[in-house]
Image (cartoon, rainbow, N blue to C red):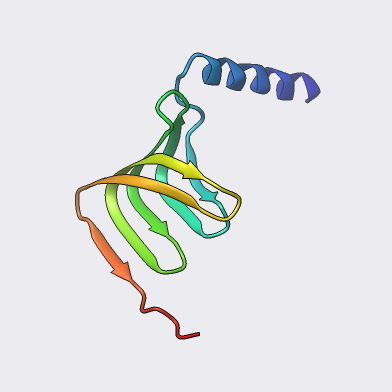
Length: 102
């Protein structure tokens, strides 16, 4: 079991260092409030881009975006937020929740 974990770690580091996409995921959370779900999610370190494919759903506190595909270009990361430029394709829908009065 230990050898398998080391092998997976080495292969994963090799992919990152070569600038290739990493393992395929089904959901990922950026900062505390941006959750991305899709049939397949990969990240390209060289371009700082997350690629989501198939039934994509991007949810935050104030909005929900759905599409067939999305490319999320990471512009800026902080402890509390992530700024993206997002390219959406196919069956795109955006729902914006009303602001909550303070």
